[in-house]
Length: 160
Image (cartoon, rainbow, N blue to C red):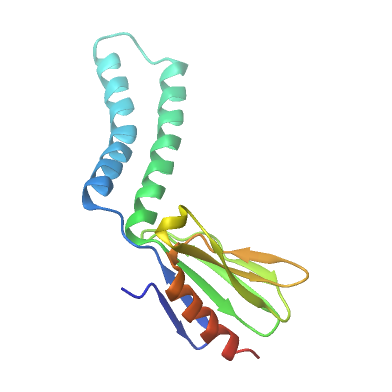
């Protein structure tokens, strides 16, 4: 499976999906972190113990944990990075499927493309790095090193 698509100076890098069992557990945990605290508060109020500040604190903390878990689950399922490469800047955006991160603009003139090994050495996976003298952008999508080297050759050919 090719994890990248490069057309019209827009580079899309897709995350390799994690196993279905891992994704099911992660989505289940995210759901539980949202639902169980609310059900606990409802049952406590129904039992007559009243409404306390601690309930709101627990719901808030577990909602943040649930949101983070949901975000990781979505990234492992639908994750995609988009790099819009122009003459003097790169616009980066992470897409989680259900929502997107804010666009980040980085001024880069005369970009240099290279790969950096990621993970275990025997996995032969790397991440893309786009750098210049001023700044650097590092992708989080791990790709097979051979595929990434092929992409780097394409990017170097299409310089402005």
